[in-house]
Length: 287
Image 1 (spheres, helix red, strand yellow):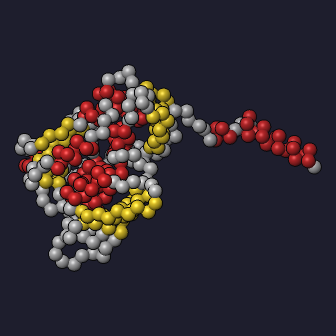
Image 2 (cartoon, rainbow, N blue to C red; image 1 turned 30 degrees about the vertical axis):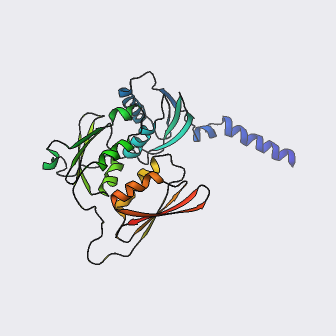
Image 3 (cartoon, one colour; image 1 turned 180 degrees about the vertical axis):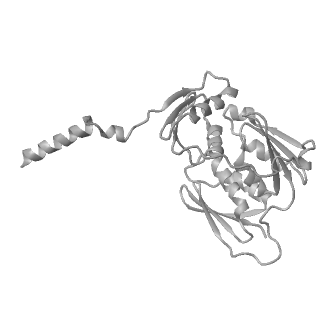
C-alpha cells in the first residue's frame, strides 16, 4: 500500500512539473525589469520611468535604480495612479537607492474634465503675490513640502500663490482647502504644472450658526509611513471634519512640526502617549 501511494505521488509530481499544463505556467512569476536612471539628466528621469511603467502588464514590475531616495516619484504615483502599484524598498542609499514598483491593477481611466474647468478665473489672471517653483527639487529627489507650506503661511487674505510642479499635486488641494484656499490648475508640458491658489476666506466646514450635524470620530493610522507622509495625510483629512467632529490619529511619535500647521488652519489638538512608540492625537476645529 505504501509503495502504491508513493508511485501515485511520483506520477502527480511529474504531471505538475513536466505535464502539458505545469504549475509554473499557471502561476507565472514575472521578473522585474531593471531600469537604472542614474546616467540620465534629472529632467529626463520621470518621463523614462513612466514610459517603462505604461508598458507593463498587470503583475509586471520595475526595479528602479537611482542616486537619491525616489520619494517625489512615490508621491507622483500616489497622486496619479492610486490602486495601480505596489512599492517596495530594496536598497536605501546613501549612494544607491533601489525600489521595486509592481503593477497590481490595470491603468485607471482618466477622470473626465469638469465643464468650464478650463476657464481661468479673474483672480488667477493677475500676477501672483508669491511663486514657488519645486520642479527642480522634485527631479533631484528633495522634499518640497516644507518650502510650499512656508510660502502658504506668508500668503495674506485674497493673496495668490503660484506653485510650479512636475505633476499635479492633488493631495495639496485638500490641505490648502482646509485653510480657506481655492485653486485653479493649468498644465503646460508633460512635467510642467501651474497651480494657482487664492486665500479666499473662511475654510469649508468652519463653525457656522444653525443646527450642526451629529459629531463623528474619524480615525487615521499613520504608523509605518515615512515623513512627511504622516503630516500630508493628516492635513489632507482636515476638510472632512465638521464643526464637532474629531480626527483621532494613531502615530509612532509626537508630531511637533504638525502643531503650527493645525494652529494656522484653525484646529486644536490633544496628544497622549500610550506607550513607547505609540501616540494618540485628537484634532478638532476651534470653537
